[in-house]
Length: 305
Image 1 (cartoon, rainbow, N blue to C red):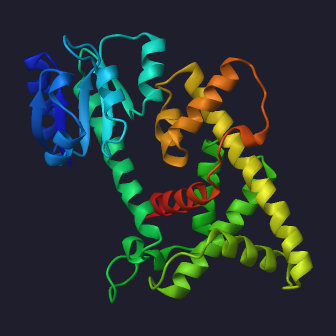
Image 2 (image 1 turned 90 degrees about the horizontal axis):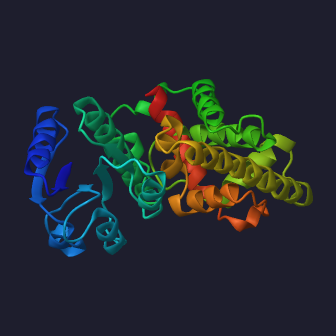
């Protein structure tokens, strides 16, 4: 990974550089002492995967800089000694991944950078899903790592994640577990060849297996019911994480899962709804069922790999 550090304190820049390089987290590809010295084109030219940026700087602060970098494809980590919940909330709403407090702690920096690196790798895998299963299964002709997985282990891992997300008691969680088993069997049969089945196909096949019939009317009725159950379950996970974030932005579950399973703009929207104690319909936030399902599958595989 390549890191770019923006902080008006040269001692902080030097300290972060040493921590990153000594821990073999990657390389620092550049530094700046103020937000006015960087923009998206510059960071892309530097091929920076992760931007570490101070909140308070003399000419253009971290908040304003991040606002100017809305289309920046890399990840952003903010660093500051300010602990104002309002300012931290604004930073997260603009898309930062984590917030590190000063004075800089070596172990905290390493922990956060490792989490961000994992998210980048996960995102790259998500983007590769529709292109080819080789992203997940390794090179053709080699023993496939997923061959050692069992449906039981996939289900156990997925159940743990659903519990972490606060949704295991929802009826839709059973549907999601069935889908994890189906994807495991499908991937094993394909042996890494081809793209993942569409969301529609997954619902169709799981419904047919559950009912033990391919009668169109019955299957379609079950598909519709399953889609509603799954959406309600995912919405419960969104609400659970938003509630955790509203109480404490540094909550480990919130930091780990919020922007992994959901678009953070939707998490923030749900947080504002909870903060105003305004109950809204399920459609008030956008639920990306496809993303959630495939992230759940890949995270389940990763945890037993």
